[in-house]
Structure formats: structure tokens, C-alpha cells
Image 1 (spheres, rainbow, N blue to C red):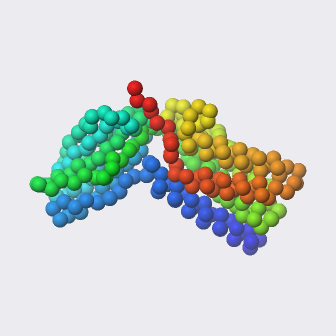
Image 2 (cartoon, helix red, strand yellow; image 1 turned 90 degrees about the vertical axis):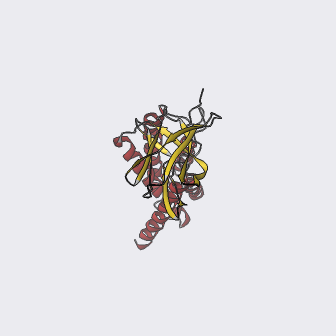
Length: 262
């Protein structure tokens, strides 16, 4: 009993760590930083993803009324000439909006701030933001929950394989069911709502999120098949668990859906 509790705690720590790593290193994680104008710091928080209708707002707090700003942007990846959007002041804030794009359309942009003769640009390399459709919460919430719990149970199954426990078969089947339901059933519904395509992985494209789901489902499918009828397949299950951990540590939305500009 104590060993099982300890293994679940270890699995939870690994899962939360991998999830945090994936989120904070992903291409849709906001770009944060500060610049200095007139001896005062200005904090910036630039979003790299925008869902739903409407333009993408860009807001930054610059209490010094002498600070002005503008946004340089263009479609990504293109060699279009840069467009400029002046930022307007609303009290202590400078605000503007990037124009709405079709699902999977991307823009690259930078913020230019000025105060008298001082000029700064942030970030040093343009931030890239991706537009997507609005995903209903009743689809998104269970998708995220099932994938997270599936990863947790996968890590627990890997630990069970290491200690040669007697719950491995049950944990392997549970992992396959959770990842299958979250990734192969609900995942395409999320993809359709966000990018108007149910599947953009192999054989239709190179979307890494879809391909990651396919890889781990195949790995756990093989391990579950090998464990049928009470057979021992510790190494297959351990390999599937390690593969799942590695695959899901890859930042989310890497090589994600991207509109091909005409």
C-alpha cells in the first residue's frame, strides 16, 4: 500500500514537471520582458496565440505619458513589407490590435517604443502569433483532462514496470483508454474547431501534436497487446512509458498547423 502511494506521488511529480516544461517552452507561450525608457522600466507581455473572432489585442503598461509606441507586423512566414500600427494611449496603458487572420494564420510582430530621443524595440527577434478558432469548453476541458491523466497513468505504469508490480496490465489498459479517448477521439474535435481540420498529422501533414498522439497510442497499443492474457511485457510497457514522457515533453504546438499564404 505504502509503495503504491509513493509510486503515485513520484508519477505525479514527473507529470507536473513535464507539463510545466512543455507549456513554458512551447511556441505559443507568451514573450515577457522589460525595457527601460527615461530611467523607468516598462514591462511587456506579448501573446503568441489568439483564439476566436476579432483582432488580437496588444496592451502594455507605460505610466510615463511621454512614452509612445507602435507595432510592426507582417504575415509569417512571408517577405511581405512590414505594416505599422500606432498604439493609442488609454490612461496608463498603450494599446493596439493585430488584424484578425484565418485559422492557422500567423503574424510576426515587434513593439517599438519611444520617449523623446530614446528608441527601443521588443523583442529583439519578432514574436510569432498564431490565430485559431474558438474551441468549445465542453470539448477542450475533457480533452486536456484526459490527456493529463493519461500521462499520469502512463508514468505510473512505467514505475510499475520497473518494480515488477502486479498492476501493470491494468495500468497499461487504462493508459491506452485515456490517451485514446483524449487524443484520438477528442483531439480531432479540438483540431477541427481550432484549425478547421480533424487531422493534420501523418499521412496528411506534419503537425507534431497529432503525430505525437499517434506515436504514443501505437506504443501503448503494442504494450497492451503484449500484456494480454496475463503475459509479462515489462520492457514493452516501460518503453511505452518512456516514449510517452519524451514525446509529451516536446513543447506543445511545435510544428503546429500553419496556413500556407497565397
